[in-house]
Length: 116
Image 1 (cartoon, rainbow, N blue to C red):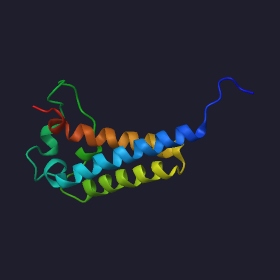
Image 2 (tube, rainbow, N blue to C red):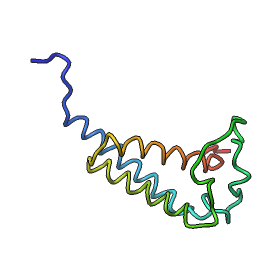
Image 3 (tube, helix red, strand yellow):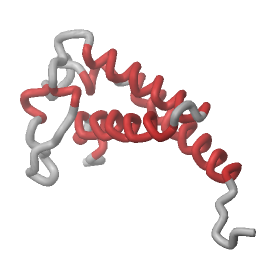
Image 4 (tube, helix red, strand yellow):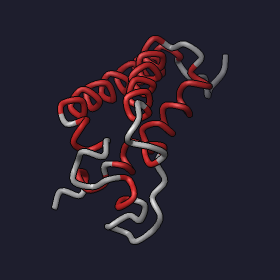
């Protein structure tokens, strides 16, 4: 009998709950997607390279090109990675991928998250 055993069912419930919360967050971003993540919004990608809050460089895949289909592909990839984490498909790969995609999404929309 192991004293430090971890119940995998509890980890699965946590993974599913976290995935559902992230999916709800993505659903909220979807309403203002074109405004915050493409060049038609108030801050085109060139203006967002330096983070306005900390003054440090902000990293985001969304800065690569907002005049193409890339922001839509990245957002769809984030939704897909979230769904894969919820169902538990190769979590050792999809969890870090989801982290990088969400970090990229948050860095692109740092002005909206500033709450100013």
